[in-house]
Amino acid sequence: MITVEKTPTGIAELDRLLHGGLPKGSATLIAGGPGTGKTIIAAQFLYNGATTYNDKGLLVSFNENAQTFKRFMLSLGWDFDKLESEGKIKILDFIPIKKVSFDVLIDMILEESRSFGAKRMVVDSITALTVAFIEKAEVRSTISIIQKLLRRLDCTSLLIAETPWGEERLGSGIEEFVADGIIRLETLPVKGELRRRLTILKMRGTSHDMKFYQYTINEQDGIVITPYPEVV
Image (cartoon, rainbow, N blue to C red; front, side, top):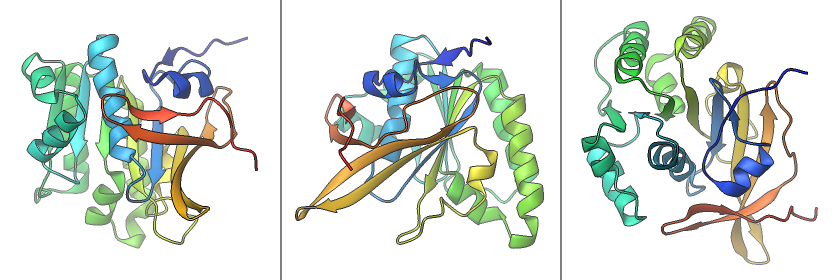
């Protein structure tokens, strides 16, 4: 039996559902709508990697600038400024997206990851990246370019995708094809209030829990998943 080496997220209950963590070197899609905590779960992955597992982390941001991100994370108790000054975290701020071709941008990310020695990477968001560069006719070549990037990176990646309101598809429709795993975050109306729910839709090459779990977002702790599955 082949043993899959895992990269723990540092979120205890999520690692339990993943049977130890994310497959090392894999790319996992974190998909959800506004307010579901996509950026928070990705930030936890980087923060825990740097502070608990001594893994360097690279954040590639297309959604908000570095200073806004760091202020928001500091409000949760996570000092990314300190980690950046210690050389444990690096933030590539592509706000606004530079006037370069898509393949040149991918090569820039690849080179930064290699030179920094990143073991964890977050792209926030791959939806913003693809929408900025892709026409429908370019989807096939774009998938090929992103897959090539991810295969060449020696790190475990989270790709954030925006789930369109009222639709079942994830992001722009191509993100699913480049990801080894998919974790979906949702907000659902329950008895007059919105509740958050998480499920692991797929994780290539390893077993995982497939039930629905409620979660909350707290200061200091970030994403906290209930240990008990929903009764559906």
